[in-house]
Image 1 (cartoon, rainbow, N blue to C red):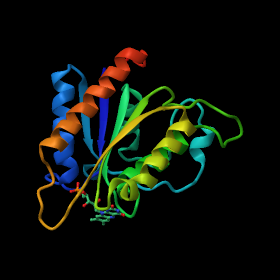
Image 2 (image 1 turned 90 degrees about the vertical axis):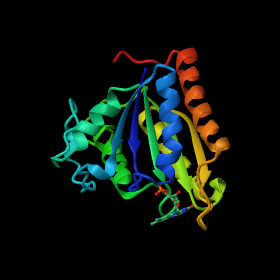
Image 3 (image 1 turned 60 degrees about the horizontal axis):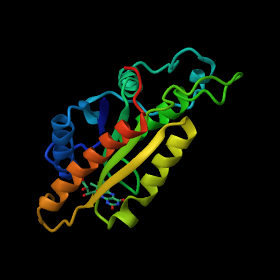
Image 4 (image 1 turned 90 degrees about the horizontal axis):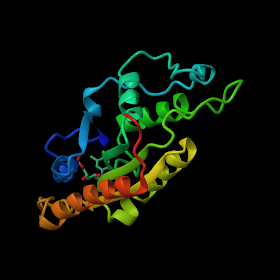
Length: 201
Ligand SMILES: Cc1cc2nc3c(=O)[nH]c(=O)nc-3n(C[C@H](O)[C@H](O)[C@H](O)COP(=O)(O)O)c2cc1C
């Protein structure tokens, strides 16, 4: 069982990293493999909307040569894609948005001369989020975006863990939050085991 964790926070010691740490520890404790990719370390240009990818039915076909293809391969080669991000302007951070824009087009051949495969079909998607507003106002649009992304590419939306940044210098992580992150990992792993969602990889 493999998790591909796409980390969209620019802050190595930030809130999202703090919430992610017990999640990753629990995955490891339960024997799940994780690949953690820090998106701010990668070159991920924004989609140019050239549509070249739509006529490439046997691969991604993105004309921009940067880290996108490798990251997409990691997404395609796992059972669950974890989108870990702080909320910025009601959605994810910029490198994650670039990645999703390019994945939703190059990975779903709906708009060219012929329809082609949905390259991430069947993968699970979970999101681990931190935001400044209460989650129902801070992360609602992001969660809806992730759900639509999944519906569009026939991925399986598995759920969200979101905790609020209180600001004012208050510590972000506490016992409840650590446990919630561990429980989230456990629940995902249980879902994969019981729903037989595992892919051959
Ligand atoms: C540029 C920027 C934009 C933000 N926009 C939002 C927002 O739209 N909604 C929200 O709830 N919080 C917003 N926040 C707060 C962050 O989501 C929150 O502080 C988060 O926990 C930061 O995570 P990090 O420590 O991993 O960077 C924003 C923060 C920054 C720096």
